[in-house]
Amino acid sequence: MKYVVYLRVSTDQQAASGLGIEAQREICSRYIALSPSESVEFVDEGFSGSLELDKRPALLEAISVLEKGDVLVIAKRDRIGRDPIVNAMIERAVERKKSRLVSASGDVSDGNDPTSILMKRMVDAFAEYERLIIGARTKAALQVKKKKGQRVGHIPFGLCLSGDGIHLEKNEVESQILEQIRSLRIQGLSLRKIATEMNLRKAFNRGGNEWNHVSILRVMKNAA
Image (cartoon, rainbow, N blue to C red; front, side, top):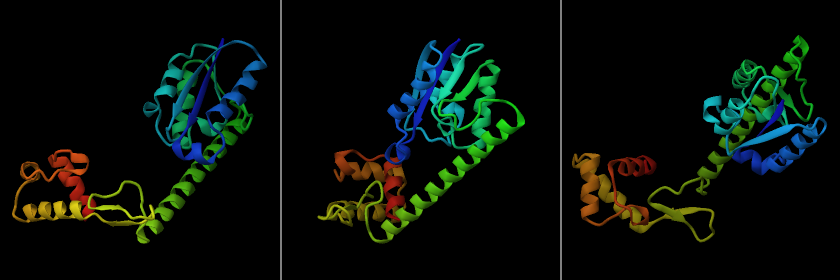
């Protein structure tokens, strides 16, 4: 029998939850110390708890090394995921290996009796609810910043940061390039022909990169 430790953080949780990789490792280590045995660790960094199993490389690998009688150890229930359906699929994958999934913090029981299963599903539901609330708040905050003309993520072509490092203002050089692109489009040129023409004019993309049909389409959408 061996312990397979799985640790996960997503980018937003790294900044806000306090349950980072080291904290999770400490919780799992204390649990494993109660019954010394072979252990191996797998870490997914920057992976959302809403992602399906096939999109979590470390979790896939962790499950692949499980053998009969092994224990997959997580610090808390929400480390395997924040979606009830995804969590159920992960549990099923562990069961097929004739292994167990254990939360080292004890926030849920690892039993398979009706009460334990109900508690797991309730924890999963609240974790999903928390994820959705965080997403809604983030979206609302970004919309407010956008309305105020403040930077939100990538700076669109044609704009640049103002002197205060917060607000956006017009980038004269890029704005002129955008006008040329719009003019060529109005004339009926395809995206590929526009890219070729702009490169011939040496009116390049940001960073001095040459245009292609994908980058032309992207800047036109962002400008719109």
